[in-house]
Image (cartoon, rainbow, N blue to C red; front, side, top):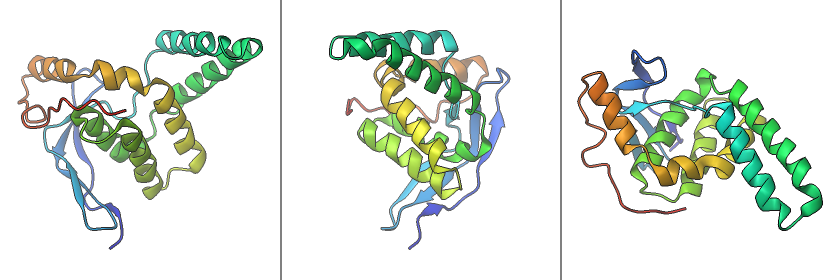
Length: 183
């Protein structure tokens, strides 16, 4: 069996301009025949990158943490992390990444697999639709550096607020919550 998406992405933009609702289930089949699905009604922000002010704070945190081990490299590491963040912010609106990003959002929401696996599955899914390796590596690098924020602080309440704000059902919440905390 060939792995890949078995359905097309059909979504509806929400009025806030930042979120979409999956209108028809999005399915992915692995080589071993295992199927995964993003259900109808799931709310996603696709491959969103936080505001630059947040990214600057994270770059400073990375540089500060590194300064304890490699003091001479902390300034260079800050500018490297900042450059990666700014570049990622500029490429986060690529429609080729949307299918994989919807699954990644679901994986982060459910937490049924370790975070590093969810991040690597995004790379696999983006490659399947033709996203270049350089962009996949950039996404993966950003997720490994900063994805812990979304992973540990979760977005169950945020998704519920969005559903309530636009008077949408909560199909993505029932049966999907998990207390597993893999990294």
